[in-house]
Image (cartoon, rainbow, N blue to C red; front, side, top):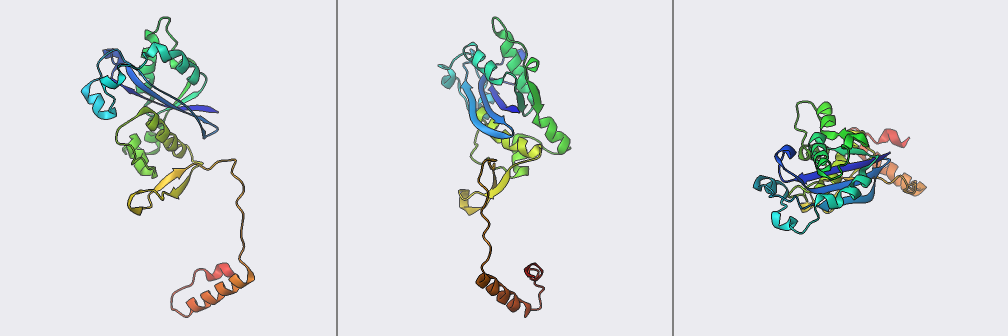
Length: 235
């Protein structure tokens, strides 16, 4: 199954008030494994980005001035998402903006729902965690996903983080490990996807000498008044 984890950044919150998309970030996932095939573009919205929006994503009007307009990237974007299931956090927001951009094209492109399935991870999270905060940041904290490197929102970064959140929300095939690079050696757990193509792990059994040493160690522990729980596994 081909899925596209998708996020956008915009000039404001309502396309009906003339707001536009300024960034699209997508990560492709096939059979629950990220392929590394991304779609990422900044877009000149041909209007001013509101200060409130800039405070969220940090994308300024000056930065966008020389970027392509939506019609220049529309066909490539359309072909990239066509036929896939789109995985989006608060899908109504992003899909509403995408459909609005498609409607402005001449000729226009059809609404996303006509050629893509849509999965809303916000709806999934609300069903699984009713009455709790279910923002992307809140879900990262709940599932132990390290997003400490994110100071501002960014569409591609949010899409990659959402991929980890989605895998956990929908049943996993992820593994937790300790992040040796986390600050102050905190041992914060982060997600590492396990490749299905990895070689089988080699099993090393204890030698007779090692086993005898283990039994001697257990015998020494038995001299204390505490229960030795490992004893029953050495029979």
